[in-house]
Amino acid sequence: MVAGDDEQGPQSAAPRRALLKQAAGGLAGLAALAVSGCGAAAKAPQQSVKHAPQPVRSGDVAVLNSLLDLERRTVAAYTAGLPLLLRPEARTARQFLDEELEHTGELLSLIKAAEGVPSARQPSYDLGHPRTPDDVLALLHGLERAQVAAYLAAIPRLSPGVVRAAVASILTSDAQHLAILRLAQGQVAAPSAFVTGRD
Amino acid sequence: MSPATGLTRRQIIARGGVGTAALAAGAATLSVTHASAAVPQSDADRLRRLISVEMLILYCYERILQGPLLDPRARRLIEPLPAHETAHIHALSARLTALGGTPPPPPASDKHADRDLGRRGVVGRLGQLNGEHDALHLLLAVEEVVVGAYFVALTKLADPRLVTLAVQIMASDAQHEALIGEALYPGDAQKAVPSGLVQGRQ
Image 1 (cartoon, rainbow over the protein chains, first blue to last red):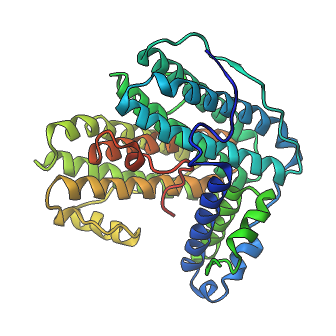
Image 2: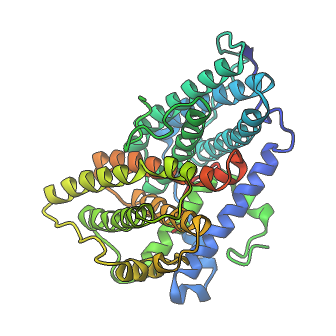
């Protein structure tokens, strides 16, 4: 299977603009949370935003770009694999594709915050030759696992802490995908107490 | 306009040069900074807080699994998870002990656990569960608190080995969230795994 990378995905319902809006909504929510948890600071709502932006190190751009490339490969796999999946799994995969697109958007934002240049998208990805729903689930499982392992290796190298936490929030989403994909494959959903991307 | 930020959504998006999650994480960090004078200052303090919340979720799993509330399917999904929480507590406690700290005690009773749940903003109470739906929602809420605790800790932890351990455990607890979501909403990923950026509840 060779799939072109389309960051808009097959679901035009979730274009990048919409994802950015969702993310911005989430930001506003969290900022509100910050304010509500700040006692006296609740009277000065601007403070959150004023203090919130923290620089992303330019030295982290290469790491973020390598993660971006993995995300794009996974987006391509979900896009190409969806038509081969049966209804319940296809519905789940569509949700996961939307979330992978969200991850891509987040990484692009972090790279831009570091004043970096996002790496160019590959014109296509060699995804093997899955022919059945089981083949597709196995492909997606492998890609999600690889992403988790890559994020886990990358996060301790990132700085400052807010960037580590932001990227960890992507890893944890991929870990959730792994658990649900394992269920769909009839495997133990969470085989280990420590998620490493190796199982 | 966002009442919280004073910015329009367009302005927030225009600041896309700053990662949205990074901004959110910054906001979360700020909330911790302002929360109280008892904000942990060292990795040992942060480990103690993480162990404390892990002990709370372990207590909740054990109490709920001891009772008859869960049907066989939900029980099958949930039953392996307390062993994970025990492993998390052991790993964190070992690191804390190496730093010269002492792990906190687990909740002594349902009453203590319920008080802790209230302090952490969880609505459900162990003593007031009426059926599987209540039990699963309580577990889901506490797992969200656990994930949120790791998310905040990651903004501050200094030792890279602790960062790695925290991420591995945060991801494990996020998987628990997904499985509880699956037990609540079988086959509905939109409800079971509703967000692409998993930050828990801070």
